[in-house]
Structures are given as structure tokens and as C-alpha cells.
Image (cartoon, rainbow, N blue to C red; front, side):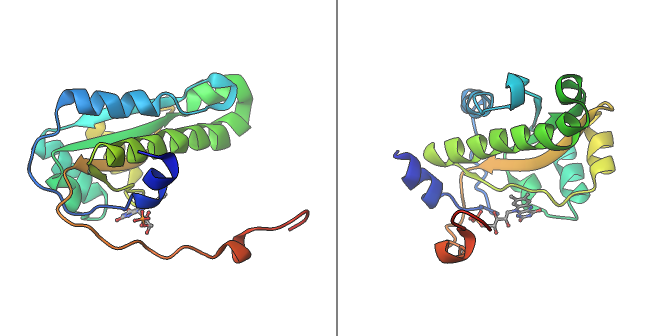
Length: 173
Ligand SMILES: Cc1cc2nc3c(=O)[nH]c(=O)nc-3n(C[C@H](O)[C@H](O)[C@H](O)COP(=O)(O)O)c2cc1C
């Protein structure tokens, strides 16, 4: 699939079929994620693969009852290892680069999943402490996104984008 076609065709999917997503496919998603760029090539990302219904249920609860999360056969929680980034770049590494790097990895997951016929949704609205406790995430590592992955059971229309004329600035802001 052409890159632009993939970028423009991807939608957030919030309804999934129960069909399984094999481990090899999940591995492909993570492999794509780890090829994202990162500041100083520090690669501060960590990925938690969740298939157990009980853990998915608790994640959905932590995510303010976004129940579509537990309907997906597999959920990937993407974390930023702030400690790794801060070792290289101090406070800027911890607060900015670790999140930027991890966000790039998340986008790779979404696009690769779409190119393989799978649906995903980047879920950022969740109670961090609850997710941290459920997944036993250590200090120095911050959960950034919960991404349910599965075969889509809906095909929503594209959401509007701000027009080019509004977002592009030439020479100065
Ligand atoms: C940082 C971030 C947080 C998001 N959090 C949620 C969320 O908690 N729940 C949800 O349903 N969608 C969430 N989304 C998905 C957005 O709603 C979606 O990307 C946006 O409406 C554009 O739609 P599209 O992804 O189909 O193009 C999030 C997206 C981003 C990038």
C-alpha cells in the first residue's frame, strides 16, 4: 500500500470482530514501531501485549469505561521509558523526547495495522495510575497510549481535517 494512501485511509476503529489476531501479526506491529525515529536513537519505548480478558477489562475501566477496548482480541499498551531518555537528555529527554519518540512508534503501529487490514484506536484518555497498577509498570516508565487491535466491525467516514490554509505558516507564524 502506498504511504499516503495508508495515512489517509486509516480511521480510528471502535468496534471489533472477535476473530483472533495471531502473534506473528502483533510481532509485525511491534517491529514497525521499533523502526520509528527517536532522539539520539535512544528508543525509549516499551510495549505491553494484553490478551487476558480480565486485564483488558481493567484497562477499559481505567480508560473511563471505553468498553470497545476489551472487545478487541489484543490490546497493546505503549509506554515511554522516561528514565532512558533522561539519561541521555535530562529533563528535555524525560518530558519531551520520550513522549515524541513513543508517539512516532504508536503511529507506526496504527499505520501498519491498517495496511494489514486491522483496525486500531489510539486511546489516550485513561487514568494513568490505574493502568500502571493493572500492568505492574515500574516507576520511570509512563503509559502513553492504549491501542486495541482487531478486525474492524465498522468503517467510519473520515473526520474533518483543518484546511491547509489554516495550519501552514510561511516564513513566520
Ligand atoms: C493523543 C490521542 C488521544 C486519543 N484518545 C482517544 C480516546 O481516549 N478515545 C477514543 O475513542 N479516541 C481517542 N483518540 C482518537 C481520536 O479521537 C481520533 O484520532 C480523531 O478523532 C481523528 O479521527 P481518525 O483517527 O479516525 O482520523 C485519540 C487520539 C490521540 C492522537
